[in-house]
Length: 113
Length: 117
Image 1: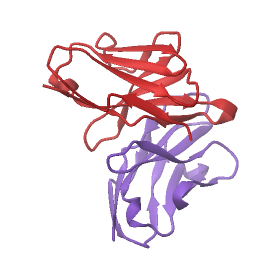
Image 2: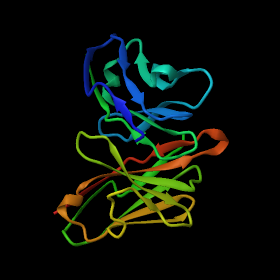
Image 3: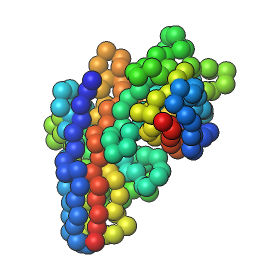
């Protein structure tokens, strides 16, 4: 079955620390991958997406993600987090020919001021 | 960016009643919309795919007679929870697919919190 998995359920870190959230997928073939963020009390917002081309994708708010095909991974990174990055982060993906997104379990990130 | 709205944001109803939730794409046309359910502290679970002008496609285990979906226009999909029961209480989220120029990205609404008493 096609799936997306996120390694960390909860991450706590201090401001200015670096963040990396793991995401792995199990699709074969060409995939489209996404990271969404859900701030407290708000709806899901798209951070970044990968369809093809440069495997290092830059998104909004200083986030980036790297697609590593050999590792079936699409990890999210931010070099220096802020308190406002406290949120839940979801990795999601679908096969290029399909449209149904499969979500990872989410990672709750708490940034201490 | 693309904006998707949902209405209402919260609804409380009595057991046995029906509740309609609207999902609108405000600045783009969406031939495909999706309905998800999110349980507390859990990820999103896809319930169904809503296709404009045709029947919705339901995921395994989702009762199509209980969760009625209508996608009457390119900017509006509705989910009706019929004969709601307390176990239907949940956070319902819709998304609209924007696939112009190869973007093929889902944009999400703010969600509707349903509480069935």
